Amino acid sequence: MSSKIILVTGANRGIGFAIVQRLATAFPQNTYLLGVRKFSSGEEAISTLRAQGLTATFSPIEIDITSDTSIAFAASTVESKFGQLDILINNAAVAELIKPGVPGFRESCNRTLDANVTSFLQVTSAFLSLLHLSASPKVINISSARGSVYRQTHSELPPTASIPYSISKMAMNIAMLEMAKLEPKVLFQAASPGHCKTAFNGFRGTKDPLDGAEVVVRLVEDEEGRFSMGFWELEEGEMRSVPW
Ligand SMILES: NC(=O)c1ccc[n+]([C@@H]2O[C@H](COP(=O)([O-])OP(=O)(O)OC[C@H]3O[C@@H](n4cnc5c(N)ncnc54)[C@H](OP(=O)(O)O)[C@@H]3O)[C@@H](O)[C@H]2O)c1
Image (tube, rainbow, N blue to C red; front, side, top):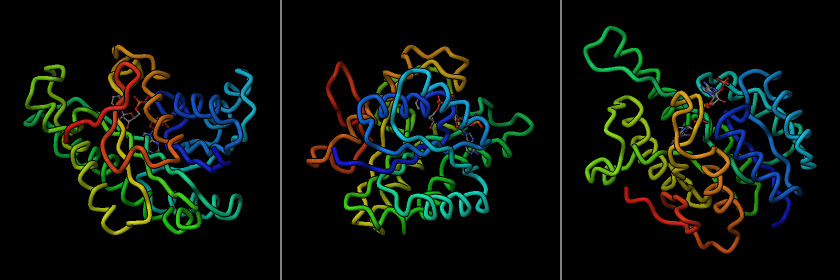
């Protein structure tokens, strides 16, 4: 793989951190920009990666995906320090377990849709001019099987209702398909990492985040165009299309 500049949002912990760790292990020639809300958490994450013996170039980039000011500042920092972007991995997201009718539901829904849908559109838009400078620009969205209507209607998911989050992941998938119409030169892909042990679910997931990150490694390494625009997961070592 040729050397690439890759930005991962929410890279200080959980699946975002695992994505950087797995990618940097497989492709040390790349530059990894760790999108983080606090610069210090990016520095800590990079120290951990270095302690693991990883030799890739890492740089923390401060970005709060719900703040347009922060997004604009992050894009200008990447422009001045790195000149372009090859792959944007929209990983940062929130999940709040709350039922309709409970006080605060409207606010929770709005917060979740803002962070998981509108922010994907705002972050991606802000980085488009830098992505256009890449020979093969990609945007990879960390989605979820909960955003699949098929999976929801074929009893293929845990029975717990997670309404704002599930709506947001389905909307993110549609937002990606719409965005792709505006940006035909950018390859948009959604990835389902599976149920991983992270703070998101109180560490009750069944997969190691490093295994969840593997689908992203497959999408990043694909330079032959084997994986088109779509919704992807890795099951038993095979890349599969997730039904929408
Ligand atoms: N865990 C699972 O089983 C699972 C399954 C399917 C899909 N996913 C998806 O995987 C992705 C990562 O989830 P995770 O499980 O790794 O969650 P996590 O451990 O809770 O990590 C979430 C990350 O997002 C960041 N973040 C949250 N709000 C942000 C904001 N406004 N601006 C910038 N960064 C923000 C957090 O930063 P701070 O440290 O600053 O809070 C953190 O780095 C999400 O898109 C999630 O929907 C997870």
